[in-house]
Image (tube, rainbow, N blue to C red; front, side, top):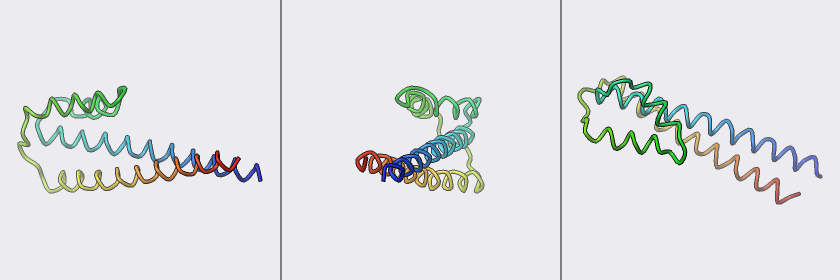
Length: 110
């Protein structure tokens, strides 16, 4: 019985890690594309900065910075990328929730 609990915890932890990594990557792509649409310098750096930092301080700083820069031009391709990133970010959050539930469930079954 104890082996099954460890397997549940391991699967839950793996799902949690995959969901977290996937969500961070989608957030990076979303911020990078948004920064390109707004004409900000160094959009890849803004994407990286937004995904790093404690308590998402980089993302908050990006939101403050982008207030001064309206969207100059957005192509259909960029709009499609943004919409896809939003959907995929939601899927990543679902994986995070499922992984967390599986870990907690496995711990309580021990």
